Amino acid sequence: MNPPHFRGNPGTMCRPASDVLRDAEMERVLKTKPVSMASDPTSGSITFWRHDPCNDVVRPMADHVIMAFPAEPVHFERRDGSAFAKGMTRPGTVTVIPAGSSSRWDIYQPLSVVQLYLPQARWRA
Image (cartoon, rainbow, N blue to C red; front, side):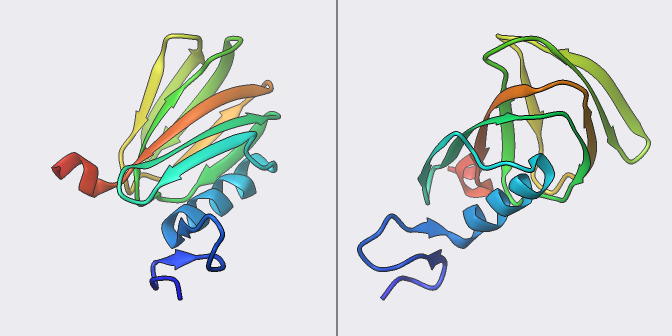
């Protein structure tokens, strides 16, 4: 039997419930599934997404998120309460989203992004 914080069947790759919820939220916002992903319950996970333009609010995540952009530059806007950021993704840049943050993203072109999810516990280790 799997520990209660895991979902999946015995004998298959199990993922923490927090990963399942986070991935479901990103799939809702991006309207696609990840291209690839790898996960370790104690260290976090990494997910590669390719998605079409999107305009939606991402609900708060339990993990810190570090995003890198391996492909073409894309214009975006991000709103978090009264804060507003307008920018452009490009290879070599990263975006850090603290755990618990919620924001509206407006991304106007298709985008490739690598997201590294780091649990709060990793920062304290």
